[in-house]
Amino acid sequence: MSHIANGVNLLFPAGERFFVRSVRHYLPRVTDERLRADVRGFFGQEGRHAREHERFFEIMRAQGFDIDGFLETYQRVAFERMERMSPAALNLSVTVALEHFTAVLADNALSDGGLDEADPRMRRLLLWHAAEEIEHKAVAFDVLRAVHPSYALRMTGLGVATVALGIAWVLAVRMLVRQDGTIDRVAMKRELARVRRERQIGRNVFWRGIREYVRPDFHPDDRDNYALAASYLARMAREAVAA
Ligand SMILES: [Fe+2]
Ligand SMILES: [Fe+2]
Image (cartoon, rainbow, N blue to C red):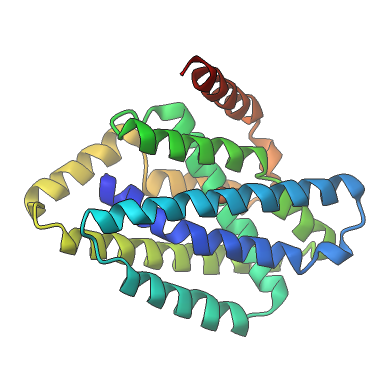
């Protein structure tokens, strides 16, 4: 579970900066003042997430993980090649699909207790990120709807996002598992099966997300979970005051 969480952690910072670039490209075409304000809030939140997750890279390096070769390849393939080659509209629709996946994972993380066994500091980082992902889950979607309201484009973005995230995440986890000398493969498979059964993460969460997203009239607000995010952030603030 640590390697699965740490694997996606490695993808976040560069991914989130890509989200910001994809949306910023279209900002001059967004005329609605409220949406423009939401976009600026989205930039701020993603920037802070990227920085906090990057601070965690230091901890992984200190634990002896050689992550820089992976990060360099990820950066080069995903952003120096794929992002530059693909049209701005596709980049935006990939961002919207990935934002949907993060919102679905966030909802799952805040509601099913899947992070209860995590280190409390890591749990706070991931749940804070999850709550903010829910807060801004509709922003990139609304920008795409304003500038390119095409179902085919949204579905193409979903396809690219699913394959790219799937491959990158699996490669990241494999790289970490390979470097961890303490892992017994049989025990690892058993643990994965248990987690999948009990927590409904992995395939089930992604299938649910895809099923929602392919509906032609889908909107991120269809799932009303803003209160879930707000109550977590309020609790976090109370705990910070108490500490
Ligand atoms: Fe984020
Ligand atoms: Fe986000």
